[in-house]
Image (cartoon, rainbow, N blue to C red):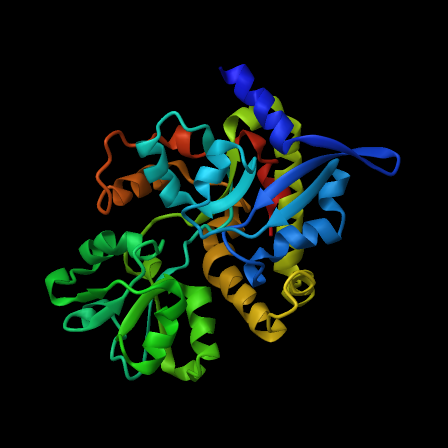
Length: 336
């Protein structure tokens, strides 16, 4: 059965195409969302030929969000994707035989946040009591609500949760129809500005500042595909790291690679969005000391325990199921 699956994956997602004198392996990579500032490293790696140097012809597709896309990787529709690490734990609990794991941690700190405005009256967690919180049911940040409540001592019975849709989340906050929302910091903050809010009036509380030790989005792979094509995964990881190193050093240049793929975006906002992600989620103290892309074993184990506060595991995945470090280059080659 496994050999048959590898064959199907090879036919569906792995092909060799002519590229000058060198054969290039075609690889489909799924983002969690549309091309925005934080996606710059992947487009930089394309534009600067880093993937090509590894023998890869990478195409990047937009995704349905940081949660739902994991099933695409597990099914082999995409051999590689960029999705929420914490959602992977729940996915593996529900489908323990799913052939998917993480190989490169991108957001050492997740962008999970509570966003409010000056008039919303929420500047610290306990301020949510007596208020209305707008939270899409499928939101990756809202998925951490129970852990956030436990770590901050919020009386959840005093918070009214309004299940809102993603498209109306920030507009409702801007209009004062809710007092705060859950969301990714670098998405909701700039969405609020686009809805007419003044920068000084938008308040962002990163959940990681209030006791959450979770990881964020990571590069995930189909394990059957990776087993059949280890050099492809190692090459993709290596080239992506180079794209991230360039992006970290020169965000203003890197964001131009995003703008080529999203001409309707505002370059100024996408640059600021990228800079926020670098500051809050990517260039953390741990990453600066240990290199980009890895995880710390003890923290990973504790993060799985913390996920258990928001989700009842039938059989909690092991750290080894969640992350495979074998495709990472040495730490010295992963410095930002």
